[in-house]
Image 1 (tube, one colour):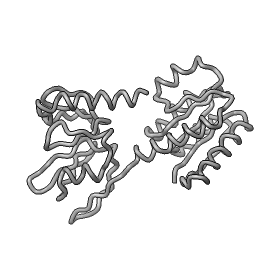
Image 2 (image 1 turned 120 degrees about the horizontal axis):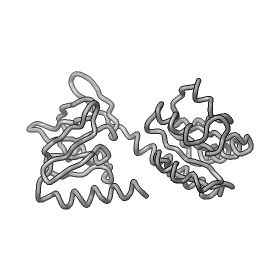
Image 3 (image 1 turned 90 degrees about the vertical axis):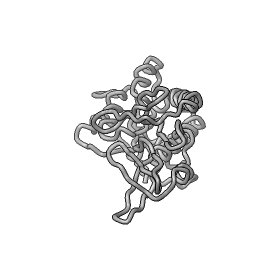
Length: 240
């Protein structure tokens, strides 16, 4: 179930957007739950986590940027689409990593396209893998993986807050994860998550992890150039 917030102080717009989303949901069987709000300050009492939010920029008591920040405090992965009739807010919206900026009056075709892209992004962001071991089963979000390292008898998955040794080979995990835009191999024995990379050089990669950054010597010099190209391509895709 994907939980969607629609918040606009104009009840007619809130209802129209909700109806568009409900139509998309029926046509694509997405499993969406839509919640409508007409005042943004609901967030001060209601700490519900939303996966996707469509918010108006100009609202009383709290504008769309302030509401978006509150939503991100509850769920850092929430995907925000902003509605506004004033282009002056674009810079502010971009500073908080808004997914899409949509002008009023709404273009229905454009809204449908961008909302489906938001759902696709959510599904990619929240993709999980199941790691089964003798002592239990672990559910891991691919976005939380720092890197996967080859071991003599399998591999080691290192996430932002834990490590799991598995019997699967690195190549098997790469095929199973199937996210070539996010994962790259700077060394034949490592698969790294570019979403977690803070910086790198010809010898090592520094990852964003819980507590403090983690630096791992996982770059082969002969793969440095190709890895750098992959990383720049990844960053360019994020920025568009």
